[in-house]
Figure 1 (tube, chains in turn orange, cyan):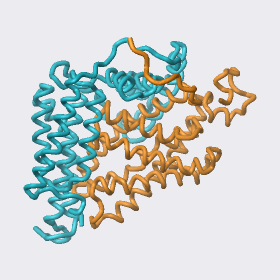
Figure 2 (cartoon, helix red, strand yellow):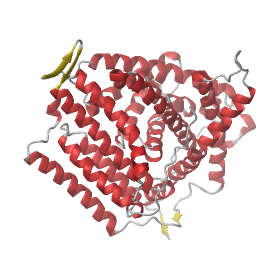
Figure 3 (tube, each protein chain N blue to C red):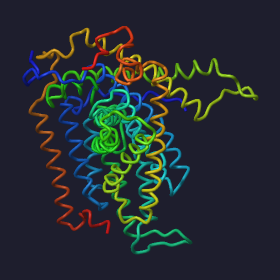
Figure 4 (tube, rainbow over the protein chains, first blue to last red):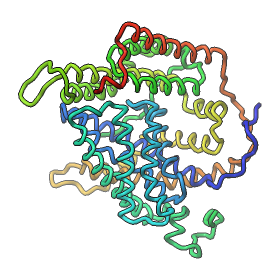
Length: 214
Length: 268
């Protein structure tokens, strides 16, 4: 028998419910990425020599999990943690062609996606913020990937950047807003921060303690 | 496309399966990180051969499984090789219309493709020899991962294992109710998959909330916690780590002495 090392840390303000939600988002998107990566491999083979470019077309879908997590939980670092968890699921349990360096890419994506929300102190969730989030998430990670995959010095560098950014805005930003709004409408996230914001403190369902602000 | 279970066959035998998961993950990370700074084809080729031999002998993986596992990495690597060969300026090797293949493109592309294979074969070795539960337990014990996040990920891992079945159930439920097309076939394609993906998300979020409640009901989050089945961290693990780093450094050094090794400068 051994006890976990370290002193009994002061309870962080993260509730287990929020943490599990991030993991669940990571698992679902990890699984869906895995399904869609297969589709992408097919697409890249169909595109022949341009196959390598097809990854930029779908680049934005890799950003989805961060804005969704932030919008539901509405607290700092939610996006970064969710991205990293999703990448862990993908690398450790599903196998990825990039390997553990995906953790670093995921953290960079998460930071990029989170910046616009952080700038509004997690209060504003309009289309513009989502679009910016997708743009920054895709933009930041592009330069890291460019270094890792040796895109500098290729003729295609600018083409890559432009496709990548557009994909980031559309898939990593605007699509996230569509998904979040649809999720909120179903009511499954009413017990999270987004539900509190939507229903208001007083109409908290069942008046559970989980619904009070931490 | 119906998703086959993303679960790899776990090899119980083999020496690699007995090594500590945290050490294995750390080594995978270190090798990947070092490879990022290597841009010549010879060094990763040598590393690949050594890694293939090491993984093959230490996991006793069937040749067929190993070959099948290579397919996605090969496809990925081939794409990188082709696009680099065609799009990198340099000494022209072959030209036809707008297409031209350069020596530099082939060299850098080959290096990047082989890098993918090295990481690929190591990732295959890691996944088939590592049990997910043991990995999280080990990360909790040896990498100081907090217990709440550890158990949350473990619960998520269980969910992931059930997900292919869940996906199939959702697809079938949709198929039963779907209005048929005029020719009598089921609606397929992107929109049907998108609908299934959204359902999967909603169902999973709901399930996750129940999971969190049951975890909390079991007293998760109380410290200090005890661990029942400890994952061992033995001298053999440190020996393995030392051996991997020695081989990695040795090959890089040898490649440097022989004049093959090229760094980031190869891109210019």
